Length: 445
Image 1 (cartoon, one colour):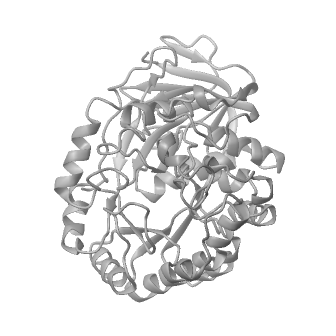
Image 2 (image 1 turned 90 degrees about the horizontal axis):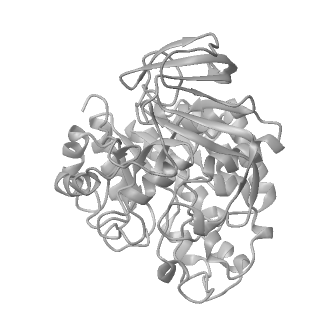
């Protein structure tokens, strides 16, 4: 359903909620007027308990199509996104087959996404051994940056960079002012950490120690200093790296940092053994660590929050009958992330405006999509309606993503996204309409 306007008592404009009617024209915001209960045209009038915020821009999603579409695909992923308030995704270069490491492979992925999107989708490229010459061509045709691993990724077709290869990739990417995004765990530390078969979450946690993150992040910081390349630390889980990152920012290095809802919502002490739905890499750590991540968000040391939605089939996710070393590492949280972070923030006295800043404005700025992640004239009409008076009881079997496994299963939140608007199109949860989502390229490509 195409809308002409949204009218609400609480609309996030210039960092504050105020009564407003937001008008649309050809998929963009054309005016932000005082609240008009009699606005003409097709108008969505939000309830008094609702907040209208910019659509979430989730820059860390594994769609997995083509090649592993049984894990997740563009249809199911973008429907889950829309139902959770996300209006824009940027898809990771793995775990699809082929990975997005050449222009030819990018074209395969773009073809797979054609006519399947409910929200707008862009693509990251990948930096792997042997594709140094492919980085600039990928940048020129519109990827938003390049992902690399400093330790094994979990899939053979996307191997990690060793220190020399990492430095060479940074140098190349810096030459065209690109962006390197890094899965920062150190291969040597992981190799030296005990990883016996075990159903105990504590044993899994010991196999991915804090030092794996701090050592890798030190390598990222050193690389940014030596090459001048813009770098971004993915899915930070260890608070022990915060001082290192704060010092790098104070030094003026071009480094940004993200964390994820599961690191902000869960704590290792509460995770049952033999529960692979909570397994991710780097891992969910203890409650004290979690609170330090929240403090770092408020202090600006961590810039943004993204889902790192990384699902798999039950066969892969539950492999090993509870042995956490065998199970696939990834949390499926695309549809629930915004509501989960909003609730956990509220418990800590943090307002929804700050949450939106972390999950919409900061992420859109990271990838240069300055027409998204904000409610202002000229921006895309991408909005989410979050109603604090509507309970959200999460049942994995009722989530839109393809495989019904989720760490959030059974939780209840006091508030949820009740409506999502993508470039002026209101998502119909009863009759999802795929095909209006657009494929995005980097501005200037």
